[in-house]
Image (cartoon, rainbow, N blue to C red):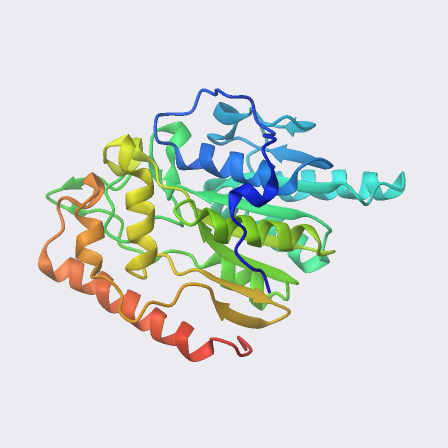
Length: 297
């Protein structure tokens, strides 16, 4: 299992350029910096269609393709090519959005996990297709307003549950799976460094709030992300060889109402809808606590 790593332990050197084209307060840009800091030298970055090209400022060999569904195949090809020339010391890493992970790219993700390809897949999850207008995705929280689930007479936002991809990858037998948040950088850095030393398929799913799509002041990105974790809307855990461990376990979770009301996409929620979300969060949290330290199946 991983251990939290403070940023200063990784030295002063940065592996990104000081500016990019991301929106103010972009959680994905924070992920980009932390991933490159944790991996240091000796990695190749893969990227497909998403917000990622806006923060394509990592100083490392990068391969970008427009094939939205192609991340799994792209990283597989790079990894096998490096193996062919005897460079398995190079980490093949992709920073892929939730659209290219949980929806359009899921078939390639699942297949790569099945084959146990030697890749590190990092999903920066802003819970919608933010680069193309803010359409809902399989990662969108229930009742969120998006451009394809607007609020109106016949719509109350997205009604379906989130797709729990981290646990799906763990059930497939991936050697290492973890969730993380930009509000807990030491936890994320520790998980990245730990994953770097593992051979085979590694998957880290990072909560990356989007001020543009979520409807909050850009200065509050970390505040919103921290509230997601503290309320149980985004639990922090890791699964190593089938054993689950919670990385953040407060005595009591904050009410989800406090976090939801910070975001414009949930401004319309009534008490009944908030209670539904609270019940689902509480139920999932109880299951995680029950499995903490044990096998997930």
